[in-house]
Amino acid sequence: MSNCRIAPSILSGNFAAMGETVANVEKWGADLVHCDVMDGVFVPNITFGMPMIKAIRPHTTLPLDVHLMIVEPEKYVERFCDSGADIVTFHPEASKDPRAALLAIKAKGKKCGLVVNPDKGFDLVEPYMDLVDMIVLMGVFPGFGGQSYIESVSDNIVLFARKIAESGRAIALELDGGVTETNAARFRSLGVTVLVAGSATFKAADPEQAIKVMRG
Image (cartoon, rainbow, N blue to C red; front, side, top):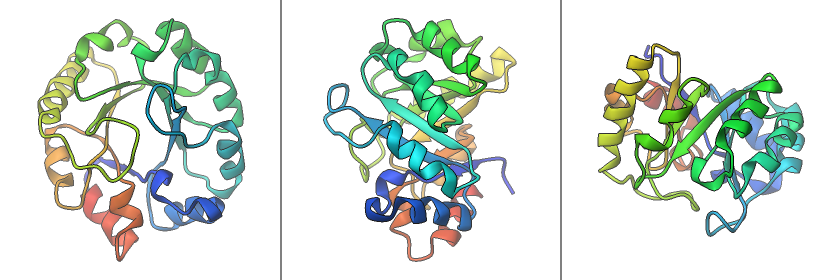
């Protein structure tokens, strides 16, 4: 078995029964629950916020991996931690003070991370390699689920995996967007250690088997 972890995104789940959705994610054998928070400003879509995180927290023992696609995340990271998030990641270009936001998450005893869009590079996260527990590479432009993977992101995966190894720190490398049962093995081979899989999990005929295949 590989060391890769699978984090189904509840963006592809049943919003009318989200407690059941996250319980199923755990039952199917996933490792994390990925929560996509969008504000309609940083990305062209609106999903949910702190109340959803708080509502689903009692329905799973899995870590809640909360991805903030919002402007000025430093205003909200502590409240997401208090709502039950275990990992909080955000886009550094959306923040006025990424280091302060990362330190605020750490101060709550949670794991922190930064997210890099397909058209961005390592320079965005390099100043914060001493702090981050996770780096998220977007395989698509954020805003909507079910998109196809952007092939040029593979170069970023290789680069970031090397930079993480050179740092000597145990930083998770997560890929978010475009992950399928078919391409998961390639991403693992490039150095990805966490795969976000929304559509690939929730639309699978056998979600439990899909997770096993993607994990490797």
